[in-house]
Length: 382
Image (cartoon, rainbow, N blue to C red; front, side):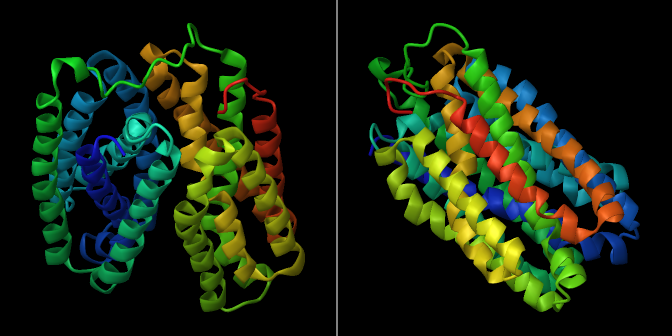
């Protein structure tokens, strides 16, 4: 394994990102019961977070390509610390919106930056190590939800968590700059993605990867956002039983990133993505066909490597000098497709009900597999 110091820093940062991403959901009672905001105002915060993702990714891609991955990463870490401090003024609604706009957007940008750096971790196991990082992010999210949910209305805990994250991010930024400064002249460009021989953007496969990622995100977020309502309204389960299905789905993703992630480099990214999406379609169809929600653990296992590996695949079709911009543009476009679909999907549920609407998520997985197939083959292993 190369760049062990950088990988350790990324691992710690991923746990912090998991915690940061979970704050919006954990402390919703604080925003409504203590700060006095309405649920419609909280809903606007969610929309602002999505917008933050798009804006940060679009501008961040240019910064990454212009100044280099590690230097940009250090800047993004400090920007995240500042966004956490802005949230300390959360009693002022504008500052709460601005803080989450920046925090969620920069978090997604840092995720993408670590994806771009993954080739420098190992010559043969980069995708395995990348999926392990996303596993650690899941630990940060799940752990914070478990520990902090009992303090979801406590202003002191809210402030303490924000200050602790901001303080931790400062030495992480310093460590990143030190790693770069300590590099020899022979390794001054080590943070850059190695030249993959591509001279210009391959637009068709990039478009197919974008559509595949977009339809996958539709399925993933559709499951996480609507599963409990599907369980209680359509299957007449208790909220606890439906919640168990959702928890098992999340657990499957976390386990899969450790277990299935071991095979991605050996099998090849594109082939592994196809196998994962096909398996996810079969299992998820069985879930909606039988109503047995615990089977979603297998869905989680199947899709566990899809997001980080698909994002990493973009670099195969772009020259190194445009790798960051191509990657961030793909994630942004896929996110737009996801947001638009979810706006329509809510209306579809109102009109046709959960029984007819939720199986559309299976179709989305199948469509994602088709678009991944259309990326085409390559003499090199993807």
